Structure formats: C-alpha cells, structure tokens
Amino acid sequence: MRLRDLLSSEEAQAPADPCLLRLLRLPGGERDLDRPVLGTVTIDLPDPGRFVSPGDLVLSGLAWHRPDAGAGQDAGAGQDAGAGQDAGAGRSDAFVRVLVEAGAVALGAGEAQFGHIPEDLVEACARYGLPLLAVGVEVPFTSVTEYVARGRTEERIGGLAALVDRHRRFSTQRQAGAGAEALLELLLAELDLHAHILSPTGRQIAGAQPPLPEKTASALAGRFLAAERAGERAPHRTVARGTAFSLFPVRSGAGDGDCAPGAALTDWLIAVEADSADWNDERLDLLDRLARLVSVERGGRDTDRTMRRRAAERLLALVGSAAAAGEGGQALFEEEEAAARLAAGDAGAVGAAGSDGSHGSDGATGSDGRLLWQAVSARLDSKGAHGFPVAASVRDLLEEVLLHPRCLGPDSGPRMAVTAAGDGAEAVAFVLVGADARLTPEAVVRVAGGSLPRGLRAGERLAFGVSDPVGGVAELRHALAQARNARQVAAPSEQVAARGPDDLAAHVMALLPLIPAEVRREFSRRLLAPLTDYDRRYRSDLVPTLRSFLEHDGSWARCGEALHLHVNSLRYRISRIEALTGRNLSRLEDKMDFAAALQMG
Image 1: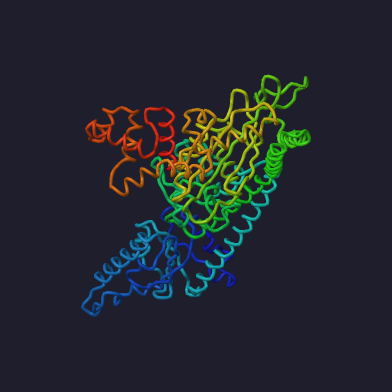
Image 2: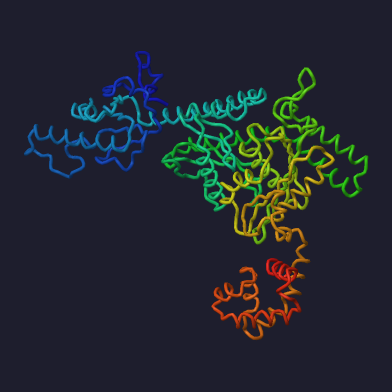
C-alpha cells in the first residue's frame, strides 16, 4: 500500500470512505505519495520513538501538544501566550524529529483535540520532510488502521496470486527450454536484486550479468557448504570481493534426508548480492519461494537425465556381466546396443551427421571414426562419520563435478551418463570425449577440491579415478577397471583426490592400495611383528630405525646423523633387525618388502 492510497478525493468525502485522509503538507513533492505504508501505530506520548517502526503511518490525537502534557509543568496564569506558543513549537519539533529518526512514513494528526492542526506542527513536518495528513473528527483511528491492514492483506494475496501466475508462466517457458535463467529474471526483476544460481562446485547455472569470477563463485559455494555442514540457519550471510551476499539453499532430492553424508554436497544455492540481515519476513519468504521454484526446475532437469542414467546403469551391468562371462558375444552385442542408446541421448553433442554422413566438428571420435569413451569412478567414504552415503547423492555429486566447464567444457551434460554403483558409496560415469579434449584428473581435482572439502565432515573422503580414452564399447570394461584402480591409489590422507592411469605407473608403491586390505595388514604384521615385539619388550627403536634407514636410501652416514647415532650403533641396530626377521637389508627385494610393510602397517 502507498501513501496516495490513503488520500481522499472530492468523491471520497462521502460517508462510504470514512477512512481516507486529507493531505496537509507534502514536503518532498509528488514522489512522497509513493512511500510504502507497512503498518500503523497510534501514539500520544511526547517521545514516541521506541513504539515506531520503519514504514509506519503514525496516528496521533495530539494530546502531547497540550500545554499541561508531558513535562508536568504548571500552565497557570503566570504563563504568557508567547511562552505557550514557544513551548508548543518545541514539543512539535521534538515529536516530529523522533518520528523521522524512527523511519515513520507520515504523520496522521487528529483534528478532534484542537478543531484544527496546530501551525507549529505543520511547520515542523515541513522542516523535517515528513508528510502530514489530517484525520477529521468523523474518521476514527481504528478505521484507518483496519483500512491499512486490509490493504496489506490484499497485497499479500495479490502477491501470492502473481507468484502462482509467474510460476505458471515459468513452467510454460521451461517446457520451451527457457530454464532457470528465465525463472530468476521473472522473480528477481521486481525485487531489484542481483543474484546467481550456483552449483556446489561454484558452476554458474543462471544469474545476473556479468557472471561472478570463478574464484568468487567457488568461495561462495564453499562458504555455503561449510554453513550447511555446521547446521547454520539459512540464509547464510558472507562477504566476497567487498560485496555482501546472502546464500539461500536450493534443496536437491538427495538433500531431503537427515544429514546423510553427501546430501548437502549436492544442493544448489542462490547467491543474492545483498545483506539479508535487515530484510522483512515477506522478502525472506519470497526468496524461499524462489528457491523452491528453482528446486522444481532442477527436478525437471534431472528428469531430462533419467534416460542417460538408465542407459549408464544398464551399460555398467552389461560390462560386469560380460567380464564375468569371458566376453561372450551376446553380452558384447548388448553392450553395443546400450551404448548406442546412451550416445543417442544427444546426437549433436557426439557429432551430428552432416549431409555426407560425416560427423560434426566437436572431435568426439577417434581416427577410425569410433566414439571415444572415458570412465570415471567416484567414491565417498565416510569412515568414522555419521551415517552412510546415499547412492543418489554420490551420483549427483559426480554429475555436478563433471558438469563444471573446467572438466568437459560448456554444455557437457548430454555427453555423459552417471549411475550409482557397488555399495552405494560409489558412482560411475561414462563420458564421450574428443580426441584432443580428454578429461583429466587434474581438472577433476581442481573443480572438486575448490569448494567441496568445506562441506565434508570429519572422516569423510572423496576420491575420483579417471581412465584413458578408449575407442569402443568393448574396451569399456578395461576403462572402468582402470578408473577404479586409479581411484584406489589416492593417498588416504587426501580429503579430496583424483588419480589417472599415469598414477598407476608412477611407483610400485602406488599399487599397494589395489591389494585387499586384509592381505595388506597380514603381510605387514607378519614381517614387522618381531621388530614391534622387540621394541615393546626392550623399549628400543628398531622400527623407527628401519624406517629412517629406508628413507635415507640405506646411507649409513645420513641415517646416523638423522637419528643422532654413531654409525657403529646404527650398524648394530640394523644387524638386530636382520637377525630378528631373517632378511638382508643389502638386498633390493628385502628393502622393498620392508618399505611396503611399513607403508601398509
């Protein structure tokens, strides 16, 4: 409701309009009539400040303006008229000044007390720029209050209707391909806000132009994930690049549960360039509604991926069954058919056929014209963390990482398909790539390692493995095994890691994680047990000595210096190690066994 909505016209003098007021003074001119009226307050105290809120229309019967009001002074015969007028002007000045400081939108002064509005009050309102309205004797303050309240209610109802209408328009536009960008424009234009829809990796899905710098977007996503992990109440307020932001969550389907690992990691966010600390409930509610509508729009996008997810699930099952059956011909045929369905998800992304039957220019084929594929394995381990990963969460998280332009370029969605695998803590992706635009583990860890670590809790670890490109579906089983093996060689100490085929050949020690855990523990225990028992019994340091000796490449001098031991003392310890274990530390094989046992222990 605006101030002009409360003013009477010639026709409004009829009894049918008992709540409209007469304008006495408009210091700011016509623009003051567009001031929003958020509520009303009736007050007759000399100091009304603590009762007035910003946007209030203040209604006053002017009892505070009487000579005997407020100060408790004797207004008897000894007081001359001039002094009384000066006192009245002082009271008017103080009253109006307090209203302006409190953010009042206007003053509605009742005429019943004096039969008119005191001139000193009119002058005070003009001096402080506060619109002044006259409330006639025939207009009860309750009528004005009810009129404003009714108008505010109608505005809310109208706003909800408009929101529903915008949602319908958006749904129609989304079916025509308008997407989240159209939704954001429709709902934020009226709020005069700049906002950006971001993924948990900082990918910019829609929003104001120009887009945020990549580092800023990643930092905002990280702040959001950290706040969600800590259980802070949204919106989350922060500052980036010297600009205040308020972050509103856009819940994913996987995020509807209660704190399953990975759930919050898949939520989008709306980053509004404003500090929501002083927002009223209505504006906060509107942004919450916007977030829910964006969530609905995201659900529509997820529906678009359903076929590719099903194709990936089928392809993963066929790859496993073909491997178990020794690459049976029927299984290979079924793989080819499933892969064809996957590739048909968007022929334009693979390379649309031209009039001569050739492929497009995106280069997603090998030199012999076959499609190039890469497999990606992702796993969210939650050792020591509360709960267990949700399969959909890990799948959605891998999709969000691969959708970032740094991984596969822009608009990469149609060229990949992701499915949950194994025990639900793993997800697998099959990706169509170009001969000169392969997916690298460096790109994956740069995207995933930017914001996602701030959303991981203690005990959670996210690891990715990326295969080499392969030229046919029959080679996908090898690519998948390669991706899984690469993922497993990531160091357990890294919270977010990505590895590729080159890491499998970097060092023989990199292959240790591929050995079953029980086998690793037993090997380490049997080889090192004599040394650990001896150290425990005699409080010696044979195991630390062995570790230092290997770390210094068997150099007696450097190892002795590091341990602050004389070389003869070091030789004695090494001889005890060899005697207890039956090994010879001058032999390469025994050195490698000891190094492996220490790493696996």
